[in-house]
Length: 447
Image (cartoon, rainbow, N blue to C red; front, top):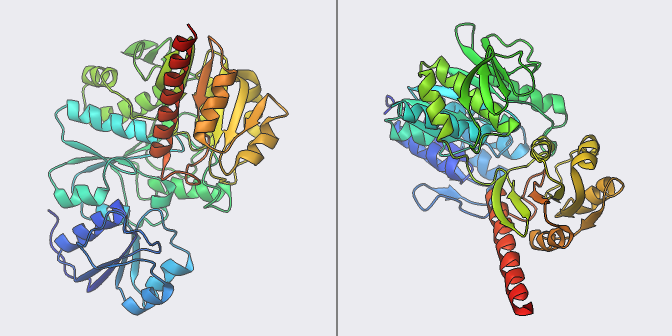
């Protein structure tokens, strides 16, 4: 447990979800004074009477509380009037990740990128654990870093960090940083792509030349000081490359991905990044290879939902931006019926149209952005607009024939209809299951 400190008299934790509760518990363990959780919404989240809680909190509540430390959950912007009201008396404002890293005494592997963060985070933790090192996946995936620091006992943290968390860092400095890729995303939060890029780039801000950064070869990262350890699935200019199902180094085969869930190019890049990060920490190469081959990726990432009558149904609900949708499309070798849609994040769909024309035979669009997607995609290929995921599954089934892939890769976030990509993916799987069951019943009755 970190050393007890009592320098903060009143702590305001903003956000009543998992990160907020974990930060409050860590602050209490440090001996801080009064701790209260505030949330602008009306739902209590994960807090259940453990700390004083103000829901539907207002700016006036923030000014009246008079905090001298404000800990911000990653989903809340730091520059809005509501947040700023809590620091109106000069309180220090830091994010939950920054707060946690100040009190975590172990090794942090910080993992960022537009896509692949969760798979890579889970894989890093899996490799380290198989190597006999106590590692926890945390941050955006797994548990909050504050919980790891509070509970103690885990000397390694595989930390998934988003641009949201990087907005409020000061001293955060991972021991190894991983940069997987970059593509436009979260344009509903950032004014420009450059602003989003700068937020993510802060993962390297406090690192120096004695440390290592695992980076996809060809990424333009100005001013980065750590040593670069590079990888790429499409060329051999990096330390690690991908050829015929193998991760290779200088032409030598290192890790056989054939027959594993990581055999596609985009997952191979996640595996290469994890391998380089763990090798930097001293893990033996043969142990890394065995751990990679035994790894099962998290759900909702191009997982098989069903296969019947020659039609493969893939659940890629984790696809929350166009870069991830494109990766899923490129991985397909069969004609695709794409199901896409969800929340309007202000994304430009024009760049993905040539790939859609190449890979897809039809598209079904749903959700808040359905009309915009229909207008963008319908000139390129047959497109149908529906409202719900259930309707999208029925529409895809009507178009699908033996040899096709129905790819549920929404390409945007889920918050128009769902609590997150997990609930959205479960809805897709359940809808496919109901359709297939109904289809089987009708077929047997027809016979």
